[in-house]
Image 1 (cartoon, rainbow, N blue to C red):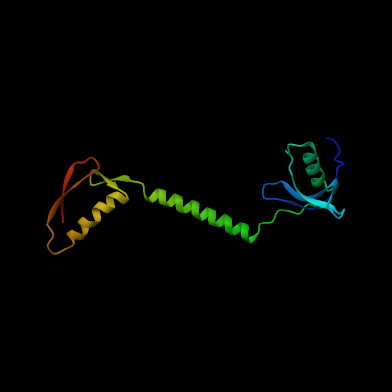
Image 2 (cartoon, one colour; image 1 turned 135 degrees about the vertical axis):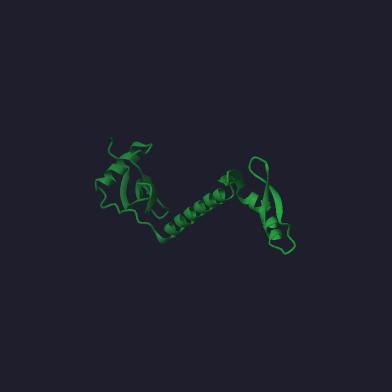
Length: 150
């Protein structure tokens, strides 16, 4: 690799959450209106698309510009990650809970899930009343009518 001679100084080097190194660099000849050198943000990686980016990463890792600070998770980053994971779990749970399924009981296959329960709740409530019938028919998963006793 070529020697990077147009980067004149580097400061505040730290690993980021992706393993790259973020830092501030001064490029040769880059000055503000007062003639002061400009510190520009830079992210260097081992697979940088430019030779000077890969060289800077190599130099930073090898200590040419001092110690590179380790990546530190901030409380804000942790809160965002927890919120994202919580949303992921809630989405998964909702998907699982809204799926229909069948189960075997007493030699028959029955539908289950939210749709089946929604159809079943009013029947159960009516069956609990004093004026309820003593028997009724309910369709199983194969749409066969099954006589049920109360």
